[in-house]
Image (cartoon, rainbow, N blue to C red):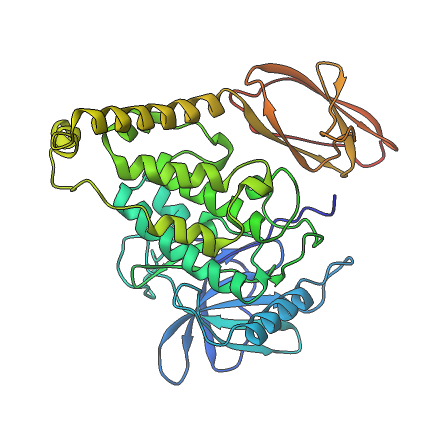
Length: 405
């Protein structure tokens, strides 16, 4: 199954000030912490010579335990530089990579402020991520289309170079000068179905293979979040936009792209981001945003012949019906600490299609959205009763054994 790891990114929100002074890196004054995770920190920084503002990611070279996040970041960035012939406009720019005796650091473009204004040294500056943008609800269809094209364009450049990102999610999509740029390359590696299962669990495909199709799956969930305004765990529930999809052909077409990208069977997904982008480029923007809401469908459909109109209605109904049918089952993430526990639902051991018991961490798909009694069993630690859990509301079931148990 591999090890599940959550990786930090250029932050979604401001972090409280720390008592310790900021790290020292050559040529930059680190002004304020703007992002933090398990392995590194991102600082708002100013170039001492030019005064230009940048984001600087700092990762300790020495840590307790067996993990080596700095070494992994160096390996990933080295792969990135070796395989990409030139910097892609939809990948976050890395301007310099260096070391001090204590830290690995690299200098990146600074994201816009969440307000839409350029990044600044103001005390209330917060990096503009797609995650922050979605905090206000779903995006207009035209904006969904634009951001999806930019995301897939950057991701396709990695896939064409034989690499996979492995942590595509809204928090790793930054807005710089109003353009979406894919960020956080700490997990970038050569495309291989057998690479380690690392990243962010909710964006991992149920089959567990972290190849280009896994990036496609994650990109499909990002598109779904932009369209629905719901978290990835709610996929494929349409939320309040089901009725709007009937009136807005662009919305329905984008949703069909997201549904195919997120197929549980990897062979039914797009092969890579380039194929998904090619499909997305076929989607026309058929509805003018200036049309009053109650007249959009009429203006789009009125010129069509009756036979064509009937076909359009059937296609739209089929798309909405497929969406609602998929919503009748849910995918649920199961996590235990330590890992490698089996899962029992209502007293029944859960097994995959080949008859092998699921082991945590994992995602089990197509579960009925109702209350189930959840129990975990660990070979060394015994049983852990998680009690009745409502899968209609919960998409992540997590528990841990206390030390000494």
